[in-house]
Length: 266
Image 1 (cartoon, rainbow, N blue to C red):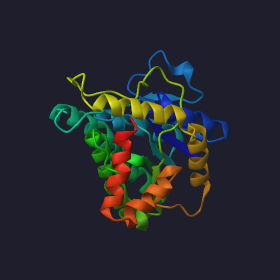
Image 2 (image 1 turned 90 degrees about the vertical axis):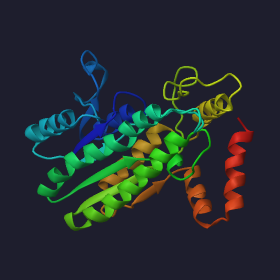
Image 3 (image 1 turned 45 degrees about the vertical axis):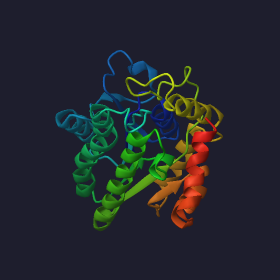
Image 4 (image 1 turned 135 degrees about the vertical axis):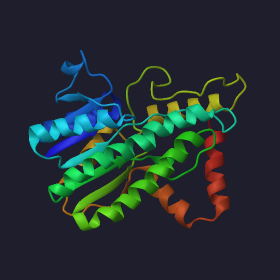
């Protein structure tokens, strides 16, 4: 099985690539500039800039020319900023969407014709709890995940006639060893000292460090999905299972109380 993992330079993407390679799958990972870092990975790492059509096409074509096919695509590219709607500039919002939404869409568009020509394949897009719950002070990130979920669900319906499976992964924050506050957590520019966004940053950092969901657990789940004959559209993990039910069935005041708890416990 030939697997392309985008955003494999660190964090979950790197763990996923190592896990799948160790299980015998042929893995290719991507990052913006792999020059000088190739030895860090137990799988080939290729250059890809998700915001550039030519870069994406070149990467996909390189794999197809060498392997003849791409059986699975796992989009792990992701960026996050924390800040209120007022604090977040349109430029910051656009930059996040360029990666988390438009980048994923661009990569899917490049890979779908390959999978259609080979009469099958699997596309997995990494969402999160943010794709289930619109979190205050994280409007840019959670709205992008909502958009990603809608895009992926539409793709799921479109690909059914072509024997291409499409899956949305919904893990909560994964426990990873990171520097203080985590290099994946950033405040938007110009946040004042008294802003509640600082509280949310600390809350997200705490949730990441205390999470019982490891990247290895999520990687193993993705491996089992890739080997499964029947693949679900959505795969909620850990707390995301309960929250998906609450969001779908509970009245709004229950959702409000749940979201309010995020703010109170920072």
